[in-house]
Length: 398
Figure 1 (tube, rainbow, N blue to C red):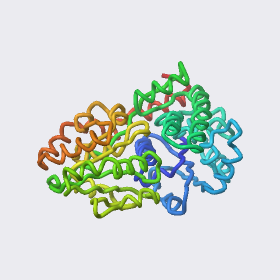
Figure 2: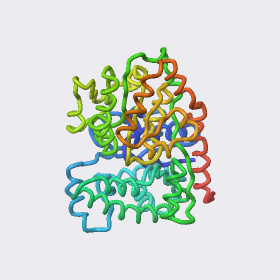
Figure 3: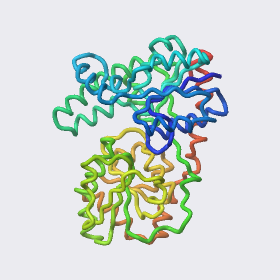
C-alpha cells in the first residue's frame, strides 16, 4: 500500500504536540506501507531535520512557509470565505511538491493531517484519490473557544475563523473516506457538523518506556508546566498559573518553585520569570524528561485547548500527579484520570497543588501510579491506523 502523508509541520522531532502524533503515525505505518511525506516547514532548523525521516518515509518533499507573506495575504483574505488556516499553511511550490510525489509513486490513499492539509486532498493533483483525514481535534471549536476569551480585534478574527473553518470541516469530513479524531468529545463535535459521516476515534498514546522515571521521586516542592509557549492556550495557561494561581501556592508553601518548560516562550511568558516567587522560564530544552523527573507535581491549567493533552499523558507516565482544569479532565482517557485532580478557580487549583505537595514523595509517586498507562502506548492506540487506510484505499467505509 502506497500512502501519501500530508503534514503541516515536519513530523520530526517529536517535541511538540502537533509533531508528536504525526511522528508516531509515520513510525506505525513505516513497517506496513510505503509512505511518502509532503510537509510544510516553518524555519531552517525544521527543514534541516528532513533527513531524520530516512528509514521511516520512502521520500520527503519539504515546502517552506513564508510566514510574513502569508500574514499579509491573510489580511486580504478576511472578507472572503477562505479560512485563514489555509492561507497561513501554504507555500510556493506546494503544488509542485505534490505533483512530484504523485509522479514518483502514485498513492493508493492520501492521509491528510489536520484540517489545514485536508484542502490539498480535495484539489489537483490529488482530487479524486481516496483520502483519510486525521482531524486530531476540531479546530473550529478551538477558535470558537478562543474567541470567547480574547479581546477585540482578535476575538472577531477568531470568531470568523471558527465559522469559516467549521464550514470547511463539514465538507471535508463528508468527502473523506473516514475521519479520525482523538476523543469521543471531538467525535460528537464533528458529528454535529457532518451528520452521518464516518468518524472514528483513534486516541493519542504515550511513550511509556521512555518516560518511566529512573530515580526515586523528587523531594523538592517543585511544580512543572510544559508545552510550546508561543501556542496561545499554553501561553494563557502559564500566565494564569504564574499570575493568579501561584501566589496562593506560595502563601502556604513559600519553599515551592515553578518551572515553565517549553520552546518559544513569548515575551509575555518570559516576563513571568521571578526568582523572588521561585518561577523559572526555561525556554527550549533538549529533553523535557529531566524536568518532569525532578518535579513533585505537574500542572496543566488549560482552559481553551482541545483533544488529549500530550503534556498530561507524559507527566503521569513520568510519575507525576497532575492538576488540571475540568476541560482537560473531560478529554483524558479513563485510565489516566485517577492520577489527576481537577479544579476550576485559582484558589481551588492552588489548593490542589498544595495538597499534593503536602504528600510524601513516595505517596505522590503512588498517587500517579493509580493511573494504568500500560494500555496507552502509541503502538496500541494507533494499532487500527493501517487497516483504516487499507479500507479507504479499497473503497470501503466503516
